Image (cartoon, rainbow, N blue to C red; front, top):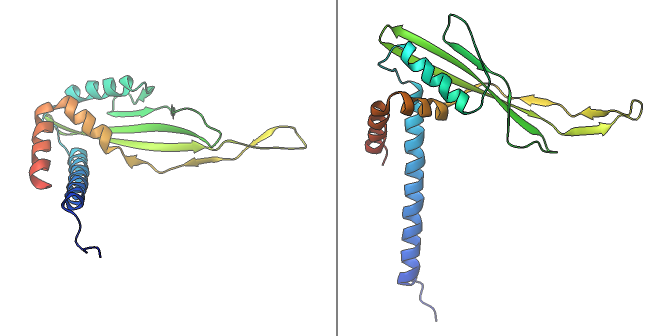
Amino acid sequence: MRSSKHSPWFQSVVLLTAALLAAGCASSRREMYIQEKASDYVYRKPMAEVWPQLRSLLKEKELPIREAPGAFEIATDWAMVGAPSSLGTNYVRYYVRGRQPSPVQSSVEIFRQNRTESGPGPVDSRTGRREALGTDTTNMTRDRELEWELLQRVDPEGARALRAEAEAAVK
């Protein structure tokens, strides 16, 4: 007859798995905490110091930018994400807005919009042309990952302090 108790080896594996899952969940929660705080971050620098770094970040991502003259606003053109597919092709574009509440403070909001163009549809028997299945465009959302990336670039000390705060707050 078998004992209802599990072997010590099995118990160790279960405990290790639970610890790894808990660590993974905590890590994920810390990243969410950091990104949320980064989206509300106010730089202790004028926009004239932050804006060139933002422009550089977008150019490094090979995003063609259009900047509004005399304002801290940037829009990128649609850029393909990944390879085209018969299931659909994904595109992304960004809208960025900078604010300067005082001469020595600034903040940046980065919005991301996604678009998926469906693959080619059936051929129209009358015209011989292939019909497009359509386009699905999502609403704009804050890109907290990109805002966090900008924060790490513009204010590394502030980013380190925010990471330490997340480590202490989320266990």
